[in-house]
Length: 303
Image (cartoon, rainbow, N blue to C red; front, side, top):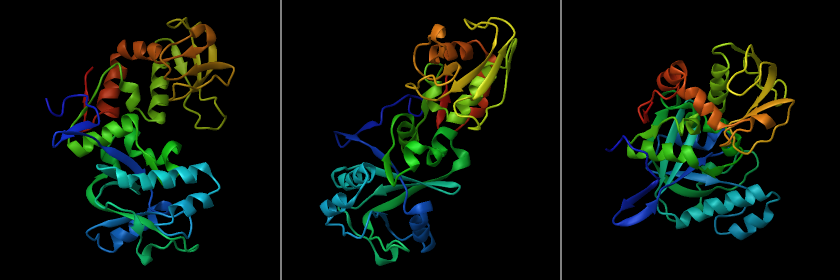
């Protein structure tokens, strides 16, 4: 049923299979360029722009050669490849709101003079886009609404959304729901929510857990005290390194808690299989996830 299924970001349109491409986009530092467009009364189209120097839109080879970092080169290439893509949406995280704009231009052109970068005079290379939706951050789940705080995205101008972020973007545009269950719930948590989940797991039964340290001591995130053996963990006090990643390495004298698929308690690795079992056995944690973390219009919880 529409709105109650897990779906792929692939959809049929006019009998052709088209991939919807969603991008995080930042229009000048702090999105000042986008704010300028909003302040002018939101004309028919917004000239979303990249900069990277004083070269013009038809001088992309010159622009790429001028860059010292590979990251800058890749961002320019990503932007110019948009000319070849049909279904493109840009997601702009600006203060307390999130804006979605759809590409309507076919070619990247020199941007308007009023968008020349203030201070250094870098020239805008622009593609026309139309505002199609906007949302309040507070009305969307944290793993998506805080993308602009995620270093994977916010260190650049343009970055393609992937995995759960892209899935949710597609759900928003299509007004559908993503389905979350005990197998996939962790993919839709923010880093802070994942850390809080681990805190709750070690705050039940004969366990005690410190609050999250917030980066005050690198990799030492939680201190856990077990009064008894606890699902394969021995009675002891230990430090935990908590990472919402599947390929992290243990860097402390303690346990690594991550989203890698298999645990290895003998090597002090706690994976998502162990975490999933704890969530499945706790009505309280399931209620917390369902009624606090995933209580949003575009999410269907199946536990």
